[in-house]
Length: 274
Image (cartoon, rainbow, N blue to C red; front, side, top):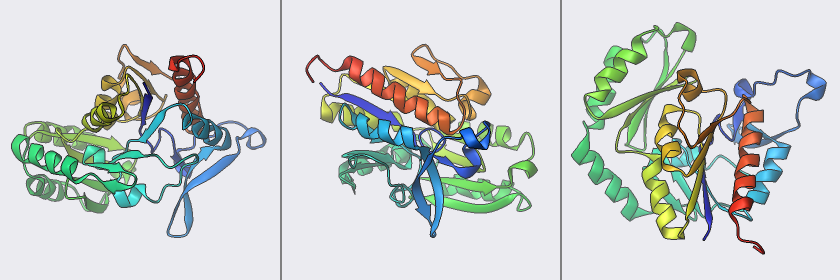
C-alpha cells in the first residue's frame, strides 16, 4: 500500500525571499534552488538539499502538493522530481489529476458550500466594507470559492482579524492571517477532505502531512503523522496535536527538515525490498 504525503507549499516547502529566515553568516547559508518565477522574477525557493530529498520522495511515496493557491498560482511552481499525479488547489476546491480538474469532485464541493455556509458574495462584501483602504493593497476572489486581502501588515489594527473571525464563524467561514494575506474561507472547503479522497483512490494506508497555517490544521489532524515548522500562524498560536511534531527550525531550513522527515517516515513504512 502506498504512503500518501500531503504537504502545504508556501512557508512549508517553498519560501519567498522574505520568508527564508537565513540567520547564519552569509558564507554558511545553504544553496538555494528557485522553484517559482512570476512576471520574469524569481519568487519562491527551497534548499538544493530539500530539492534532492523531494526528488527521492517521489520514488517512495505518493506526493500531493496541497495548497490554498489557485490553480493558476500553483501552475507557476516548478517542483523538482516527477510531476505529481495528484494536487490539491484552492484549499480543496480543486482536485487535479495529471494537471486537470476533477469535475465531479469540484461539483461536490460547490454543493456542500451551497448547503452549509453563507454565500461568497456576502462575505466578500463585508470584507470590503470593513477593511480600511489605508492598509489594503489588493482584494481578490479566488476561483469563485473564497476571498482574501493583501495588506500592509504593520498598519493592520491589532483586533481587526479577531473581530472578522467572530463575524465569519457565525456564517460558517474561517479567517486566516498568513504573512501579508488575510483569507476568508468557507469551513466545508478543506484540504483534508480532498486528501481523504486521494487516499481512497490510491489505497494509501499511511498519510503524512505538513503545514504552517490555520488552514492546514484540519490537514494535520487528518494525517497519521504530521509536522509543523517553528514559524507561522500555528506556531504563533502554540497549536499542537498528539500526532504532529513541532519542529524547531524556521524558514527554508524548516522546509528541508520537513522533506527529510517525510522521506524517513515513508522509507520506514515501505515493506522490505520495495
